[in-house]
Image (tube, rainbow, N blue to C red; front, side, top):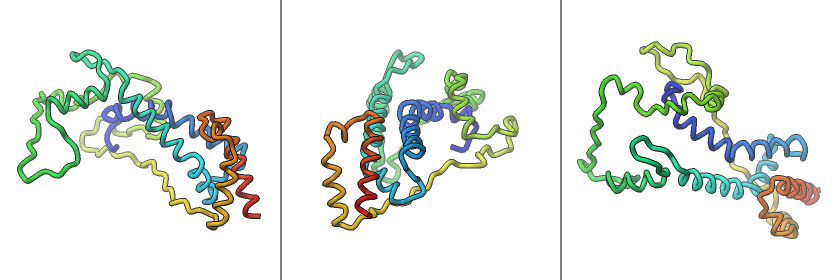
Length: 217
């Protein structure tokens, strides 16, 4: 996102909600594993084990959060209370279905928006969210202050883009070792393996890490 924060506020609000609902929990969990349970994020074998144990659970948490967010109530000025899922559905009824299917040449006709000139700068800005100090603080953590906020000739691109490069995790076991690992992991109670309690997940990590070390001895 490479524009001023006032125009980023909608995605920043969504990112804040996602961090509060999902991201912060998992970040804290992985930090605890690193500080207290032997996780070394620099070791590819540890990253593989994290993926093996928790990637599906993390993705499930994200999907559950997305479904919840898509069905939470929004107050729309002049339109009452709707959920994001409702807005998408009614938009398709009013404006037609949209997606990623290719169109024939000349088939696409852009919708003409009628905006007064003085409204363009404020188009799409969520002023209520912009006044929320928690959202502003969340944005400021990763975005430096705009040094030229009023200069119309300056391209407002951030100096740094947040990116984490994650290499593909490779299994450190041979086929025979992997069978032994999977068998011993299956001895854990299914209730514990499927638990969403982070303390239970920490115990699973500790057991699995010790198991990996024993197999490789």
